[in-house]
Image (cartoon, rainbow, N blue to C red; front, side, top):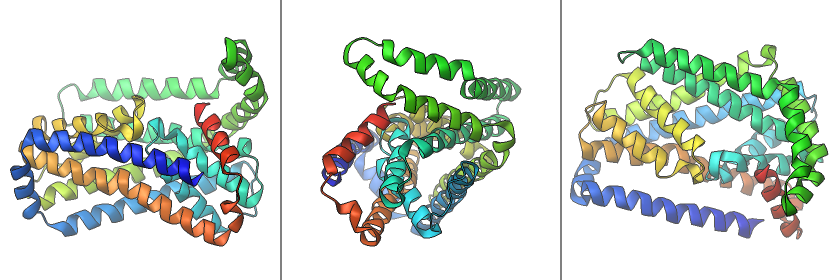
Length: 337
């Protein structure tokens, strides 16, 4: 497990280095260096702090969903560290690798993965709704903002219908064994577990269970948008807060929808271009602010995840067991689904 995580992280880091290197080279290394030399680094520390508050708010969602599914008896510290450990795979496409925390919970508390895997999907649904809300609010600064807000509302309603519809879930479960070749054999093995995941997902995404998690998502992701605003302030730029939130939310959404690790290349470029073109931020400052914002969000999360995992391994020596190959296979299979 440790070797697999290391390979994934190193691969994502190398990809990130290439992406950031190209952007810095394109804007001019001397210009970027000059901007960073005058940057108020306390702004970066504040942005990291706001990101960590976002993690705490998202942990409250995790706890809320555990309570709905009647999963009790998990010590709060263990639960918190388990939640944070999911960030080690933040650099997987769409963050599907965060199902890793379900595997950790199974290892330390004996709770089957299929009981908590639906929480990861519900988290992504409420995060998506929260990001769309931020986009809708930020779009009010543009002509035609009502159109953006209406489109966002329709999109959210479509997601809720798809997630909450028994017909959709039953169709997916029935289709899996019919896939050709190895996919069909794999689908037959996981169909029953997928049916259970869909049943639990419909429970935790019922309308009465969406309000609180969605509010936490709006506030949490909004704080990371505030972090970008503060970083821009550290460069002496004073873009409006709703507009900055719009930049961050749209770039985050694009990075989540396109299957690349951590949105690398997609989120970065869109964030930079929006600040430069829509926010009138000078190009070199836009690139510098993007780099710092991504370090304060994406890479800071990965670091926090590995620290949490290391503490868990110290608390639960069973996590160092020699069955790493089977654990790695389980993670890959859950990520694939």
